[in-house]
Image (cartoon, rainbow, N blue to C red; front, side, top):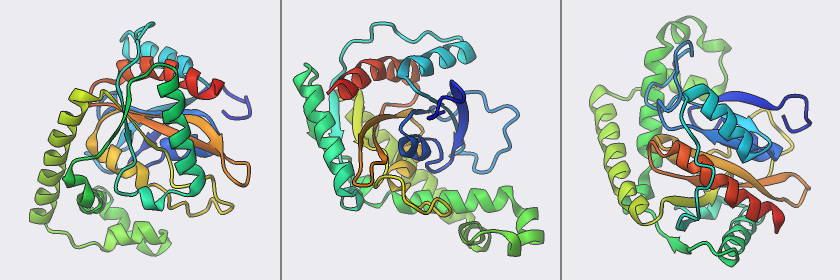
Length: 270
């Protein structure tokens, strides 16, 4: 995608597997709402987290493939939504280049006439990593019970963590309920700010791509079930791409894709 071998690619995200590599490679990435794209034929792993998405070199190309696949119309003139700058409770994990990219994007959008303001996530997000971890491990262990039984020794460390997890059905139900409460609270924020601007990753692409562990800025949005996109914004100290992420409420996929074109025009022209 990034080196022009193909114009489009599809992907799946259960934690950060669309937004993270798209940001690292300097392309546009789109993660749909949960069930926003038909999952028929896709091997399931974690039923309340598995999400489909696309990679492209422009927001317009994302709109083309989204419209072709879903039959829905992406607004050609989506206007300028109010944007909330959302640093998240994980802000301390963001490298300087990521923080600088987000602040620059916010300033550029404000200068271009967007109504931009700092926002804070509801308090439920201070501990949002815990319900994600419980749900992810519980559902993954259920889906791959046979594989864990027969091939645990051949799996990597994080898959083994899933296979060895001991979360009970009650703990899983409590985690699902906590995520539901967080989604409701987040919906109230979207009433005022239809788009949230937030980091795509904790840093630029690392030298070691064997075990990437920078999805802390993705997992919460996957758990919230709404659409997100990453847009190329800057580069880090090693010259590698750094993206910024925009997020919207569940079901606002077409609107977010439409908004992303104008937002990306501002960011890339700065």
